[in-house]
Every structure is written in structure tokens, then in C-alpha cells.
Length: 417
Ligand code: CA
Image (cartoon, rainbow, N blue to C red; front, side, top):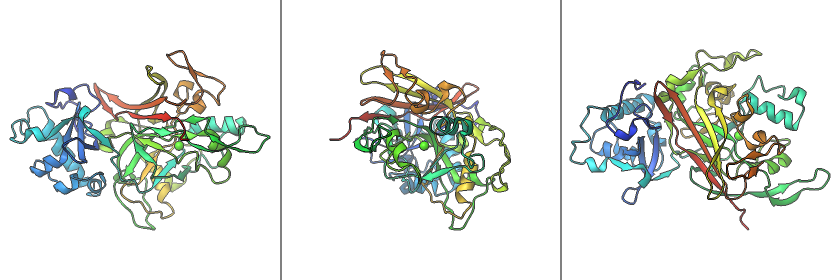
């Protein structure tokens, strides 16, 4: 951990969501620079390729000169954590190695001058369903209010295999999907654009260490496999989803696009924000037992900005509300011997808190269309309209330090004709 009393000589880092305690990894390019690994500090990006070229960090420059962080993650935590501390040292107040260096102009770019790319070459993507409040809300709306949770939910971190090809970086718009929907219960389905376009507020993590087929990761070792976290919008077309999901679960209602924030926050940067999750009752099976605080206090918010209008924050939730933690998710995912690869992404599932303003989807916030959400421009929403922009943000705050994630933004474009 980088101690909270440390400060960077990069002035904009103070009070920023990218202070010296954060140092998240991303892939950036500029007019002069091809895509490569960068680290966010204040309003700047530190170019790891240039640092490596000049031997200011202990890294093969070719590992940094790539369009994903996969090879970097594959170096292993011992190596990447050592590099993280070298970077922190170079940025720390009092260290003038970079400012006095003859190549100093090459080390930084202004973040607003850079293009940010999807930082991970994603192999497989798994989506969990680990918020009790979310699963309960959905159960009340679509099944039986008296038995909202399905019988397996308190025993299994429920998940499904999603689609990696359509995961895009923040700032990428998507077209409203089309498909089969069934607007009238008693009539046959129709082919239509989705009328119920929704977001799902989630946190994703990326696997930084591979396993062999047949190997199981314990909850105790799971954090060694979790390289870092980012925000994740699991876009969902509720009407397509509702008609298709029985019996095998989500398919075309989900796989047209999902959006990831551009910076991967190392799990080490979040160590000070650990909190205990809710007590798990009934007792879980031994392979899901764990020790210590495995949840994280990360404030989350979602805003909607209609075209050319200011945004309205419509949801404030928190990653701490997860019933199943990431270590349990990873232990469960591998309990049958399913192997992991570097670059696999796992998402939390919609994160809903207990209060109505903490619900992590429009389905829940507007309660299946019955409670329209008021926006500042005077309009109402029950689902996303064309040209709406959806913005997710995440912050872990303590003792005057904020570890931020950077926005996870996308815009709904009209359906393609
Ligand atoms: Ca989801």
C-alpha cells in the first residue's frame, strides 16, 4: 500500500481521483504515440513505455509498448507491485529524477489530449448476480414477492458466461438493439427495437494470473489472481431478456454491448477500503468460507444526461453491498476445475443497496415502469431514451484521499435501420 500521507509533486494529483495512492493502469495513444500502457496521475498520464526505455522502472519496454495490459499483468504480482512502488517513488514529492531528466518532455501526456482504449484483451467474460437486494427486487417484480430469492441463491454465487467481443471502453456509444420482444402477453412475439433499454451498475475485475485445467482457487488465494477493478455497465434490453431468458438465461438481451471504464485500479490501491460484508446465513459450504474483510467500500453513482442537457444523478449505491465477494466468486468459478486465463473479466452483477435510490438499474429505480424517474430538464424516464448518455462513477474515500475509477460512459444511439 502507498501510505496516505504521501503526496506527489504532480500538483493536479492532490485532491484528484488519481492521487499517488491510486496509480491505475490504462492504454492510451496520442497523435504522436501509438497505444501503450499509461498510469493516471492527476490530470496527466505517465508513459510507462518511455519510463522503461530510459530504465527508470524495472520493465522490458516491449511489455509496455502494447495495446493491452495483459502481458504486464502476466508478469505476476511480485513484479507488478514492485513496479507500482517504483512509479510511486518517481512521482513522490521530493523526487526530481523525472523533472530533471533530459527526456522529461516524453514522460507525460495531458489526459485530455489522449485517446483511451480498452485496457484489457478480454478472453472470457463472466457475469455474476451477487447483490442480494438486486436479486430480491427482480424476484419480487417477476416472480413471487413471498419467495423472491430462488432456492439456490444463498448457497451459490450465481453467474453465467457472457460475451467478450462486445465489451467496449467508456465513451463508445451503442445502437439500440433489435430482436424478439413480446409486448402483449397474450399475443405472439414481434421483431422490434428494444423499448426497455437499461443499464446495470456493476464493478468488474480482471484476472492477472492463469490456472491449469482442473485447478481450484481457494478463497484464501483468490486475491493473488485479481489484478484490478474497474466500473462496468452491463447494458440490458429488458424486453428481449424477458422473452428469451427461460430456460438458459441471458443471451441477446445482454451481448450487444457492455461498457468498461478505461482505468484498471490495482486491488492493492483499495486495501484501505476493505469492509466486512453482510453475515452469510445459511452457512456456506466450506469452499466458500473465507477470513477477513473481503468487501470494499466504494461509492458508486449513475447519472443520465439527455441530449444537450445537464446530467441528473439517479442512483447512489456502494460496492460494499455485495453478498458474495470477489474471492468467493473466483473460488466458485474454479471449484469444478474451470481454468482461468490472464485477461478474463468477471463482473459483480447489478449492485443495489437497500434504499430505493440505491437500486442499480432503471428496472428497479422506476420499478418496472411504475415509478418514473424525474430528470432536471423536466422530462421523465422509465428506461433509457435514444441519445441519452449514461455515466457511472466510483470513488473510494478516506482520510482526505479519493481513489477514483474514471467515468464509465456510453450513449444510446437510435437503432440501425
Ligand atoms: Ca448483469
